[in-house]
Amino acid sequence: MIDQVNTAILPDHTAEARRTVRDWLRRHELDQTAVDVEVRRRHGALLVELWVDERITERDAEGLGVYLAQCVRRFDPWAKGIDVSVHDATGLINN
Image 1 (cartoon, rainbow, N blue to C red):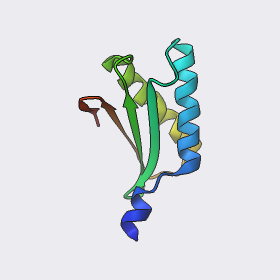
Image 2 (cartoon, rainbow, N blue to C red; image 1 turned 180 degrees about the vertical axis):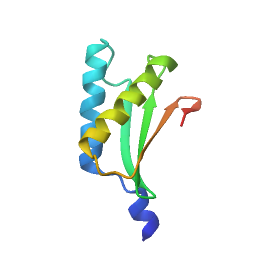
Image 3 (tube, rainbow, N blue to C red; image 1 turned 90 degrees about the horizontal axis):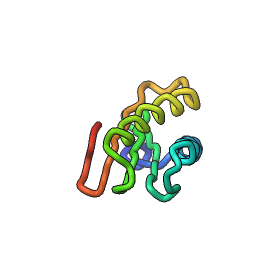
């Protein structure tokens, strides 16, 4: 049961992260389908998992990850911590 709680997607956090991603993509004039994101709780902290496709450069993906962490922190200032993992088609870009 504990593992399910730690791996369950947090719907409100994920919705906020997706709004953030949509706004970022719109400002950078990129396709809305180029990125997906989910937020889960992990060991009392939040894990933001960001998936990007080939239309997003590694540099942009890392910048978006930093921006997402800031936005999720504003949404949930009481989280113990926030970790962002950025994935592309080949695997993990950064963690």
